[in-house]
Each structure stands twice: as C-alpha cells, then as structure tokens.
Image 1 (cartoon, rainbow, N blue to C red):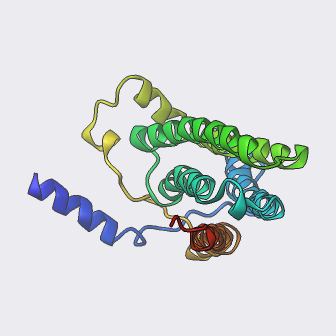
Image 2 (cartoon, rainbow, N blue to C red):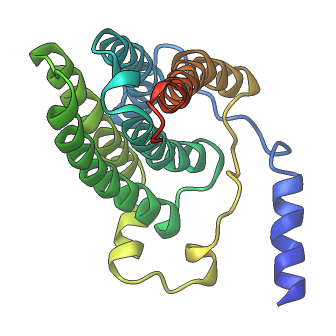
Length: 219
C-alpha cells in the first residue's frame, strides 16, 4: 500500500514532465473541434455569467436579505463546479474523474434548486437573474458531456465498473495542458469568481454583525 501511494505521489511530482497537449492550428476534425470548444468555449463562458450573477445579488441587497446563508450556498456551488474542473484540467480522464464530473454536476443542480428556493423567499430574484442561473446550471453538464465524448473509451470502462486499479486513481495527465492556459484559467477564476464571491461573503458577514450590534438589547 505504501509503495502504491509513493508511486502515485511520484507521478504527481512529475506531472509536468510529459509532452504538452496542443491542438494543431487549423485542425477541424471532430476530436480537436470538441476539445477546442471545451477548453476555449465552455470554460471562459463560466466567467461572464458568474460576474453577472454577483451583480444581481448585490443589486438585490443580499447582505440584508438572505445574507450569509445564501452566500455560503454560493460557495458550496462554486466548490461543486470547481473540483471537477480542476480534476479535468490536470488529471487523466478515467472512470474516477468522469464519475466525479457527473456526480458533481448532479449535486450542483440540486444545490442550485436549494439556492433559488431560499433566495425567492428572502429577496427579489428578477427574470434576468433566473436566466443567468439557468446558464450557470447547464455549464457543468455541458463540460461533463463534452469530456465524455472525448473519452468514450473511459465511459465504457466506467459503465463496466473499471476493471483496472488505475481506473479509480487520480492520476496526472500524460500530456498536460500548457502552463499558459492553466494560468489563464486560474486568473479568470480568481478575478471573476473567487474575488467577487469572497467580497459578497465579507459583505454579508459584516451586515449580520452590524444588525446584531444595532438590535435593541433586552432589559
């Protein structure tokens, strides 16, 4: 067991050692077209609606309505979407990663329903915000679907239960994505998702603290 863990750790320590995965310029075959759309279409599409949703929350005065509870649900949904994204960008796509993507997408959808149920009872949720939610809800499923199409052999293995031990291990990609691309994605996530929603949580926590301080004390 220790040898297996050490071997897995060694693989991750050398995860950038393999040749970088690149899409040939002008390639228009189905595989490269799907991969290009997944990497340069689906991923960036996450950023704009995330910022737009944050703006909607701010305009509806979330800190004085649904407050910390809804903001915490937003953090949970970002985690549900973020973990499979990190796995898909850095790890070898196998039955484990595909199962993580599918399970996270279903959990994200269920949490989104919880979020809207809470929000509509506490603050105004406009039709525009609901449309933004619809867009954000479908992105994890879209990413999982395109990934499954690109790795249909691994989908078949997952359906059959994965007979090899490596099918259920988190392994680094043999051909990692470029450092520039991963850095750009990390920067986009930080600027468009982490920072706005961290600001939202801080704002909600401060508002709750101020409300408690201003509440009349019982004699």
